[in-house]
Image 1 (cartoon, rainbow, N blue to C red):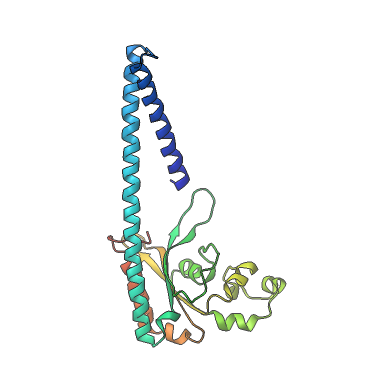
Image 2 (cartoon, rainbow, N blue to C red):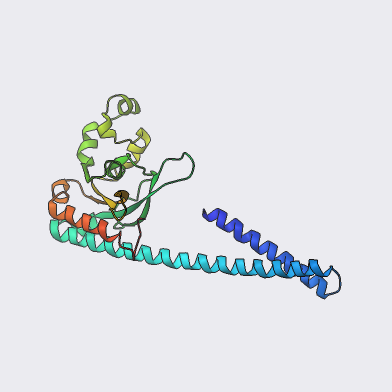
Amino acid sequence: MSRRAVLLARVGLAVAAAAAVAALALRTAGVWSPEQPVLVAVVLVSAVLTACSTSAGAVQDWRARRLAAQVERTERALTSTAWAVADATGLDYRDLGIAAYRLERRRGRRPPRLRRVHRVRPRHRPGASGIEWRPGVGVIGSCVAMRQVVAADLDAVYRALLPCTREDWDALVPAAVRQGLSYDEFVDVRDKYAVVVATPVVDDTGPTPRVVGCVSLDGPAGSFSALTTPEVLGLLDSTAQALLAPASAAVR
């Protein structure tokens, strides 16, 4: 249920409960003299609505605490991985960014999307793009769609394309280079990311393994070889598995 639906439901319960309480107050003041069955019904409705409202608040508070714990746990895992990558590669921790994404399936015919669970990024780096990532789009979307590690030296690839017009992007740039990005999305990301490596988060606890998200790592220009070593890929895979632990379930 969406936040808007939850809010509307809680407002509706509050209004209905207030109406029942007002009816009982009118009866107590002698303004309203209902028949006994009506009075019993009002009392029961008031009790049920009060219980529902209280329960809804308790459930929402529990969910908020659970989400906060998941985010904190994910942040610790991502931060420790970024420091481990910095130690393994000699790169400056401040030049690294790491994030966890969850594959989110939506109702109706809307395609699934990748919702960012948490991101660790130094303050001096550019902010995140405004793109709604989805399977097959960009490095992280390709990682999820292909169910395997995907790495790209975007700085080198995009510099080789410039200057690139909308017509060039749509007609001349190969699909493997576009990675599902529209021209506007390309313009949004071309100066934000240099090297990106993504590894899928695979849940194999069921009868059929399924990709439920991914972990992405990005670094400065010229760091492609450093960020694609077996050691670094192993660190990312370990982080992906850690995020599947029942205690966190952050990418489920």
